[in-house]
Length: 303
Image (cartoon, rainbow, N blue to C red; front, side):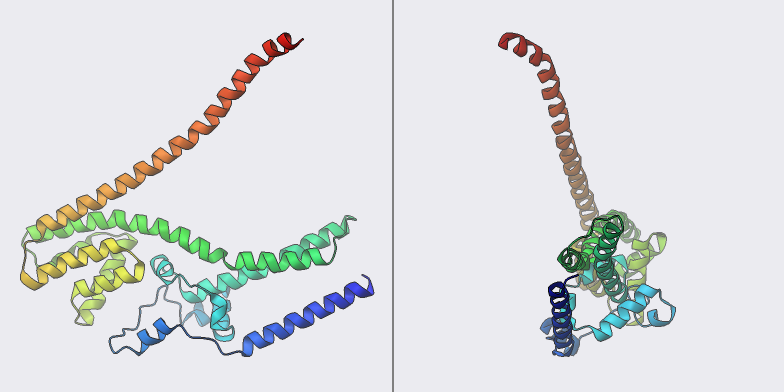
């Protein structure tokens, strides 16, 4: 390494250290919506998504402990957008999510220098700028990898949630038809299933009972927390039954049928899209086959 390269590397590291120091000491700008929500008199402390928000420092994994350290020491603006609704439906704590972001970023920082060292060992040294810039770019890219994973997994979880919700609405309708009240039908139907969707609804209804809240109010809160508007529709129907004693059996059956129809339409759309993608390789294969047949005749005609 020449003296110029050493001076550039030293200046880069010194500038990076100063930038990180200023970033750490600069006051962070709090989210106004979250601050006002916490100061609201109607604010309710949210449930623990994965049960490790506080206990993670003692009984959680290394990723949870890294996340807790990052939450305490890194400025709030470093996290950009936190997909809280996606984390809630996946039952992932924010500590684990932040820990995964730090681990992914560290992985991105380490990979280019390791590759550069490997190329140096085989006699193909790389310029100093390539692994340095590669580390920064890869760390920035990997920093958002947990966001992408959470969004993708949450989308699949919401599809599974809606499938189970259709069956849950049918069971609630059956309970109402048999003479149960709206609250009893909601609780009885939630106790039947053993999947995570039913257990999540049952836990929310039990929590509402302990807090002496109406179950549909808790379902409204759960729908907003998980980002599942279909559950919000169920809460609206049950709230109507609690207010004026309306006959809701037909409304529940219609809502369950509409939910299944929407899911079927979505599955048909995915199947049609997959079928259309299959036409592309088949068409290319036909073009290649026609070229094989036509090429000898064209060559004979040209000669």
